[in-house]
Image 1: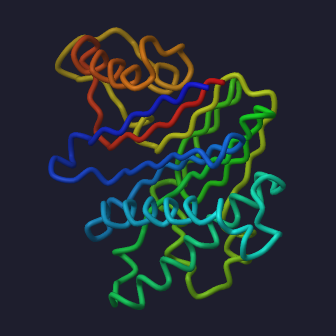
Image 2 (image 1 turned 120 degrees about the vertical axis):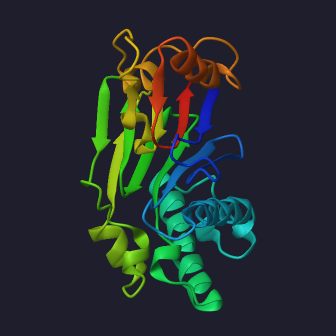
Length: 246
């Protein structure tokens, strides 16, 4: 299995990109990945998206050892949604604790998140989304656009996790996967330089559909530099992509 990733700051975020990403194998069967996008109108939004990633890292370190506490958390027998909902539940509680411990404003904890749990053995995936983003799986393309008012997790800390999960997130399931990606919405905001004539380019197709070339650790970055230097396109927003090709 090949893992391709790209994290790049947009033109309007010269000091701190507001996107973050995390991915990790859980044993030989499971692979967990997520992309986060801090609220542009929030306060120091890079902090929120980074914290979400650190919470996920904590949960992914916990899960392989949870069997010693409860048989219900043996990842060898859990399904994709059980793993994903556990991670999101931990994130939900971590954000509540962080807000209360540091006396944070709501504007300081707002970030979107697309969480993917991939079954290496069965080549299937479960994806949960909170806020904007892009999902591409083989011929399926979903651009989640909440019209610049994402329904952030941070808005719902006064309700129970189960209610937030059921009413304020969306879930997707895929099987027999050949190519799957999750991305923040910055990819859709890549535009041509109006001062220079450029060849037409569809950024979603360019990054998430066209076959990547070269070693996985550099393939998407090479495409990004080609887009900037050869096609003269501009990334106005941050970009975070994780792409899996079994």
